[in-house]
Length: 318
Image 1 (cartoon, rainbow, N blue to C red):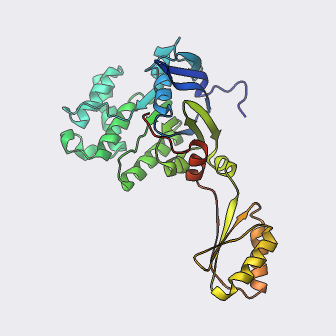
Image 2 (cartoon, rainbow, N blue to C red):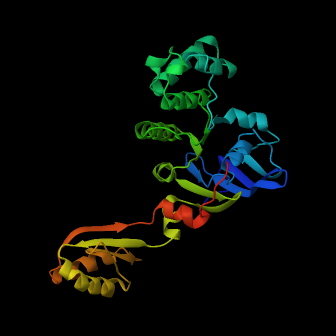
């Protein structure tokens, strides 16, 4: 619960953005505490990027209000820009310059002296593993290197709030994992991160808070665990060693859980488990009946199930 004295990193009420007759963002409310990672999920065309653009002062709302660390995004836009860093879907780096030259220019634009810009550039190149490629042409950079450089550029001013719009799209699994580590490090050092992503596992791995947007509206806002619980209970997954004991095992499980068992792949059983404390009772009852198991697990609902339950399968543009 947010106290009255706590300044939120992001606070939005009824944000609206229209393009002609289309309401791309339709009354979005948002609260993000400092030091958190907030993941924003939604189908293409849901309004995620448009919301980010308004919060980052790149686009003016047609309605509603929003504050960044207590500063109004419209009335105090210049102050807001000093508090944020933004890595968009498309790189902001200059392809004709080296990584080193890009970062030094960004540093100078942020008001750093020549000496400070040089040091800051060296620090960021080291942080993002780009020191060896500092003077190379960007034509020789992989997609992952470009994304890391783009993120480095957004951190020149050490912003307390960082907007990341699909930061790992198109990256290979190893580079995605490296980017996740960088994001966690930023938060550990005091930053707040708001990221949009198309990868549900990314939100599950990183986010303390997940906001689901569909058709320009917030349709869910909770922790990852809270969202998973909202779509159903956990399920018990068991594999019986001997196929001729499946019927007996089914009766025992249904009696203990008071739930219907589904038989999958002959010996694999699945049943909803509203109370995971019942697992011990099930296993004891099966053991007393001399029913041997080769596998036992309790499966939670996934974010995939949450996503499709809340949004369906809409398609479009951000």
